[in-house]
Image (cartoon, helix red, strand yellow):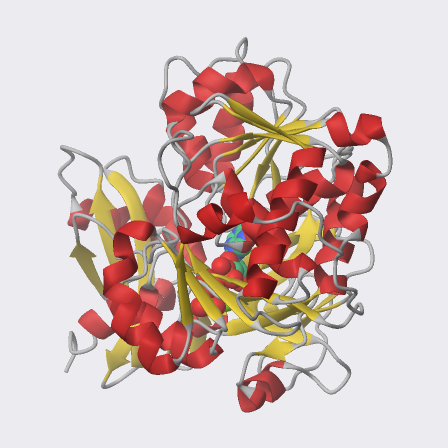
Length: 508
Ligand code: ATP
Ligand code: MG
């Protein structure tokens, strides 16, 4: 892992090079600062009894120091375990009990909430908040860091040793801890920096959360690997993106970043004409958004596909056609196949099935879930992603949905996405979620959950009528439900399991 930094730190010029600017408090971090601050934190961790292989769990507000803490944990040979800042103490109890970290670092404001829990589990409790000024403490860990030496001999680890445990987003059920090795992270960072043409001159506008693979590994590790720099923001708002984008060369975002930016009159072709790259991932980018973005800015968003367990698997090409509605080609070194869900046999191009992947990016298993791990790997080492997809004639991978969301009605397979795309075309529909619920005759029945646009009145009969000519009868919804908003998890992903549960008795 140290290799990501080593080249940069080898020369004085490299040490002085910029790693991050923090527009919100006016500070800047050089690569030399990265080494020193992560060195201080690593010394603190070792002093607190953190040994190689120990987990360090972290639930702290986004700050550049929390990136330094990530690097410090890895430099100390320990395993970084970031947790979503949206999780409540009740949810955190599961993660701490499951991961049994040596230390838990929390927001100073939440310390009291965790004292009893951590002491009963025998876990050390430290705090880290956001740096404000030299007079105000940012927490017990940064305070100790100020008194610690900057020099730290990075603990050497082998390629297969764990660098992080990252919990999945919990969209389809309980979050699982994905065990990621040094080699998993480094190989993916180097591949992405290469295929996306990142160099030391790049400036990435960073507005993603850093407890998730996208903001932590894709954005941060690619930057470190290329020796590039960040404009580091505490979170996303269209306004701060517009203010800071003139100094950036690239942006990585989830699809909502792009739809929100398109709503802003200040987001214009002129504002972003200097930009080199816009990347989207974590959730499907609607083809419509892709097209609108190009019309507005002249840039084609580059969509890629990955998951907590595998880092990134596919990407649209840097040079060549970025095809809307697809996630591009398997990355170099990644084997990807589409298989039949039942038989596990590889399917010919053009047929829909389960996506399986194998490569240096793929995790070694779920933390303390050997059975789940066995279930999700084939004998030949392929990981069963649980995503349903198809490869088109030109080799582009398209994600159709998740296998858990597949509806089987009257013996027919129905992929919700196809119907969702049709429903979204209705001018009154803001978004939709199609689910299957138990039905006495059909096994499952198709239910369309619709969210109207603000002030729009949905014409359900009209929607049903317009669908009839476009999609086979067995795929048409048996019922339409209208909601003000769809249930989402803390990553903003639609929770279809919650919808299925809510409407499970609709036909009984
Ligand atoms: P859980 O596994 O706990 O149910 P999750 O799968 O949502 O939650 P993540 O690992 O954060 O947790 O998300 C990975 C998933 O996100 C992928 O398996 C895929 O379904 C979806 N995804 C990521 N990128 C894209 C993309 N570009 N297009 C469509 N879906 C995507
Ligand atoms: Mg998943």
